[in-house]
Image (tube, rainbow, N blue to C red; front, top):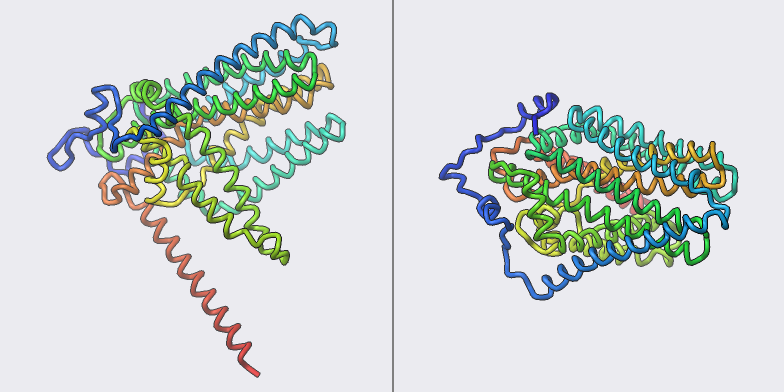
Length: 469
């Protein structure tokens, strides 16, 4: 993959060793095992671990088969019964299918911006995401019904939250720019091919599922609502697996470069990942979203625990302990060790979490929200002009699909950042790393010490005022 021009700044900061082996840097076990086509297991794998990996791998292929059959049946049934139920396929399908294609194009465009100019891409993300999300909310309000207006208000509130968050992290953007430039300066060879293929698969698969959703929408029975829910859940999990497979492969190749100074082809890493690590990826694709959801909910409860209602929130500390335990067993950092050392996902998550604490990946999330909003606006405006009754559902479907396609498109970016942090945590003295992370850690330590001193002074002043007559 050719090195973009914007990476010249990063290459001047990060020390890149020649890709030659020396006595001080012996051949890595990863590179040696790569010749044999399989990552090296670092510990004896338990029978239970192998069983769970095979179980989840079987679940993946089973759900792909069953959902594909369901989509085919629903599509055929919908086309046959469309006229009797006053369903208009020519007005329902084109806007949504077009939005799926737009999500793919937007995802490709977004990653190109990140490749050639990370600082501008970061700032564009925090500007565009709230604007586009608010636009979707306004579109839903314009549809006219009470339900549409309520959901539109939620989107507007979400946009305001994004804006406030963007203002809050303004001081961190410089560090974000530098980390992105360092971690993505020299992506593995054929990374662009892997990413493009992943986006293409996600777009084609999403378009295929759209036909089934349309078939279920044509009759609109309670059972059809269940079918649509099953299809959307299958879409979400499959997209997670696709994203994480790409993430494991690219993070593995990038980790080898950071830790050992050796190059690894992203395409070869992907083939090994799909062949040997699908089970662990499926487990991680299940645990990480659940952990993120529960941890986010508990954080919200903890924010509310400052309320005077001590009875309601007396369990906040207990919930916080539970959340910390869950994130130890299931976090996105574990995907790096899954690809590099062939570990089970839980073991990999635990090992990486011991070395450092989590770093929020809001940039990729907001970028995917932007792609989802572009997709949603494409479908929503189109269907609002041709058939207003379909506007609400088509807009929401387009947003969900666009979001997941966006996450797949930017998985390589997150993989590079994860590999950079994990490689640094394992060998901070490695000459391939500059002082960016140590300086950041030192700054956090200074801020924490300053905060502790202030809290101590406030407590002492309060104690003195209580003791004075």
